[in-house]
Each structure stands twice: as structure tokens, then as C-alpha cells.
Image (tube, rainbow, N blue to C red; front, top):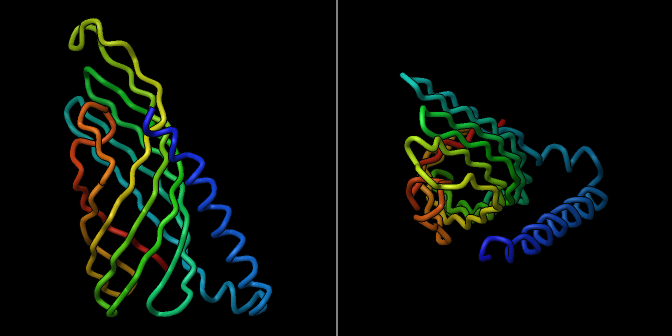
Length: 176
């Protein structure tokens, strides 16, 4: 299974980020470390006739300098339509490069547990799904202070999985 082979990479990346951040914190003192950490993430609610989509995705970034940041995040989402429902949860690690103040280039590795339930009337014979999904995003965004708006592309996108509709995804990142 393709997605599971990236799980050790995600764990390893998270380990090295935590180790790097802790070494940096000791070298600079606790105050300097926390001055460089920004918290934020995303919240989403979409409701319609027979449709509900909820998202909570907190995250934190550590800025090494004005050009380079790394971070980690969690995500929980629920989608429900008349014929289908999905619960997804997982974690991600992200690296952001800002060559100029207004531009962000990002690489993000995401590991999500996906739980899809299908209505047999609309999807006859299709079994419910439980699997891990790995996404590797390359993104480009416009930064305006605490808010970045952009688009990211999942290079590991699988159109046959009920995870995301498209390899391209718009994003809004908010950090304080």
C-alpha cells in the first residue's frame, strides 16, 4: 500500500523537527524560542441541503528567520452527504520558504486516517473504507501579514480514493 510507506517518513520528520526546536530553544533560552513560535490553523464549516462539512486544523510554526519556518499540525474533518459520510484525522509537517515577504513556497507532508461509509442505495456493493492516506503538497501562496492565501498540489494524489476531489487545493493559513 503506497500511503503506509510514508508513515515512517512522517514520524521521522516530526522527530527531527521536535529535536531541532528543542536544541534551538536551549541555545537561545526559552523566551527567544517562544517569541519565534506562531500558532494558528484553519476552521471550516459548510452546510447545505443534505450536506455538512466540518474542519478543525490547529497548527504551530517555528520561524528560524524571516525566510524559513517549519511546523506541525493536526486535522479532524467530517463530511456528510445523503449517500456518503467520512471522518478523517491526522497530522502534518510543513516547511515554508518566503523568498520575499509577500510570497510563501511550502512543502507539506500529511498523514490522514480516512473512514468512509457509503450508502448501499447509491453505491451498491461498495464496501466501507478504512485506510491511511499520505499526501505530499507543494504550495505557493500570497502572504499579507498573518494571513496567507494560495494553492497547493498533492503530488501523491490518487483519484480512485475518496479523500480529496482534486490534486489542486486552495488554502488559507492564519497564524498569530
